[in-house]
Length: 328
Image (tube, rainbow, N blue to C red):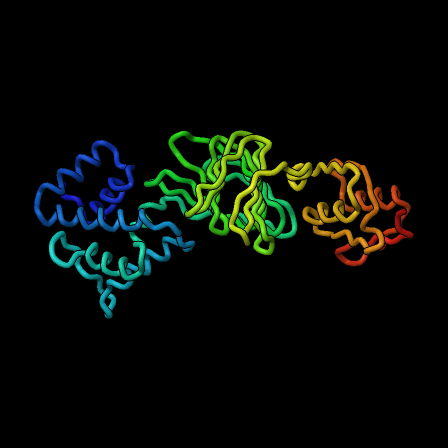
């Protein structure tokens, strides 16, 4: 039975994306050899697909809405759809002209991105979630994450703004890449933490298990293994390897350990995790404390700090203000 134009377009899409069965692939190839027009039709599809696969920056948009917009442009003003023929001025030719005007190719993008973009947002609280590929992720507050998968390139891509911990479900035949501010972190069987806030001058990567490559388009970067920390300086555009801080994953575990740290440092660490801030006046910032907390509330933590140092606490909206005589 002869396939409709829609059916052959769908089969070609699966064929180019590497998702067609053996029978479907054979059908496409047989159809293409039936006429010179069919061969040209398939070739145009291949050109658009290849053009889109060279695009480095993926735009974040609703692919279904974008595709519908392309199709709407090929309708006549009275609302009748242009007849679909295998020869002549076909849907693909019209779409191709529009695609190249738009840039990367919405139709080929739709073929490449068979999985829609998934977005995870953490505002005032830590958020735990699972990505479509099965990888676990924990977002610190004030963090945005978007996920997409390219079947043609066999690549999972996460775009991150903020801080997140990744526990990757590693697959040897597929890549997992985190992109943030023009930097890339590629997983090599790993769990790792990425801290990348726009207002900070640095981007930090700490590897918990396994290994990652931390790089840019123009710099091969550094390899990091378990218990290693890599820092990228946005001003000097350089990478460095350092020792990770003790409380890197405290926002995830809610376990904090401080050893002879200043009160200023302790408050800064806690303020990165909890919505309610601890305010330390200048004359108390150099007070030192050795203490640990395990899944306590910010109210309990503040009370312990105040009691240990002989301070008082005043609660003002979303903050606790410490007061006292100071430290020698």
